[in-house]
Length: 437
Ligand SMILES: [Zn+2]
Ligand SMILES: [Zn+2]
Image 1 (cartoon, rainbow, N blue to C red):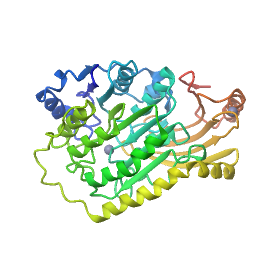
Image 2: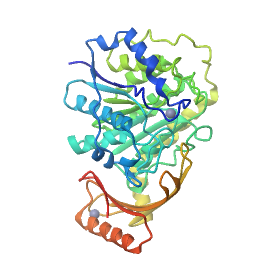
Image 3: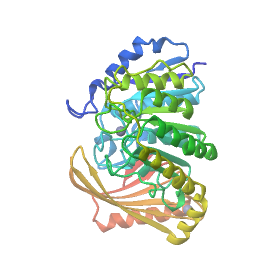
């Protein structure tokens, strides 16, 4: 059996604009490097063509306003479909692991979508997670996000889900987009401790990242025992990345991939198109395939520098602070649930940097003793492609009980009869649909 399934979709005809960092040439040099190294001919590697995802795959995760179909282009369906191809390759046992080298990326896309945020419209890892649940009945899933930016979309989507462990290390949000990703964003009361944010100081390199992995991420994963580990593989922690200020090398990334042993990796960011991506991607591919990656070295290491002592200090603080949060999660969860009662609410203001859309949102988690409950979301946005919009949304989970379903539908009908919403939408994860009532 080949060790690694490789889904390669460079989307050479998709871009936000010709000079945008998430642009057509992103995987051009990676492709040349993979061909030069003969990666596609190795017996340990099997190449797959991505398939197209269907709208129902997207609607298990997203509620698009006015609809997700109106907000995406074909490249999005292939990027998401490439992840589903990777998932099928692993689940069918054809390969041991898979790496979806696809674009456009996804980890800044939240549940509600009005347009493009942080280069992302749909969250391709989240779509794969819900697909793994719908098709293969997988419950416990861990996502380890190694992109330099906080994956605020993945955090948003799984914030109430006690079966999805989301771990992200990233450059501190006080110094980088999207500005979130601190340890106190740890999950809503029912899922407290399942969202672990590890903000690192600018300049942190291989040493700090590996200390964090060995001291915290590995032990947490070993305790959680996920059925599947997904790596949101952003390569923008690289020392040459033009959008960030970190100090990780191709060897650092490859060793991380070798230690993590993700079942499926999905490419996220990485904008050092020529100096980093070919080497980081090749290193990760070789490591995931169980092959020797020790000779994958960037030709130009002039901007690599020694990590400062402060970076190590921050890493040790995080191991301590987030380690305690993880160890005490069950007690903290009970305390939080006792305190909030039958409902928990959060208000969010979300800015879509690519399109200048401003959204304000109130999300309410409704708890139930017999099931995982349901969500209601009130959202308003200005300056969307379709003008000013608002919607009332009900999210029915896979395990929402019949009493909760009735209660949720009653709230939806009430919202409809109030006449104050452009859309009243029901997201039903079992039916994989979003319906406007
Ligand atoms: Zn990124
Ligand atoms: Zn219920």
